[in-house]
Image (cartoon, rainbow, N blue to C red):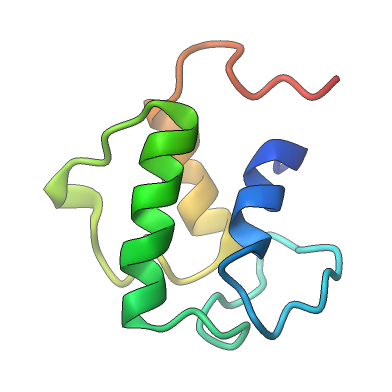
Length: 86
């Protein structure tokens, strides 16, 4: 699974323990410093930055577990071609 740069860049701003490192799809978001307040801020940032609306039924612990689990939800809601890296 490939995670686009724009998504990783947005995600990194909410992960205080990531140290700008390359994020892997299995990386645990909580281990990288994402707490409950961070989830709310990240959710708002993702919705605003990428013009998405994450429905309540996807706002689960599982969604915000790993980089990959969050990306799968965001990718499913994105417009086709929205995350094509240059």
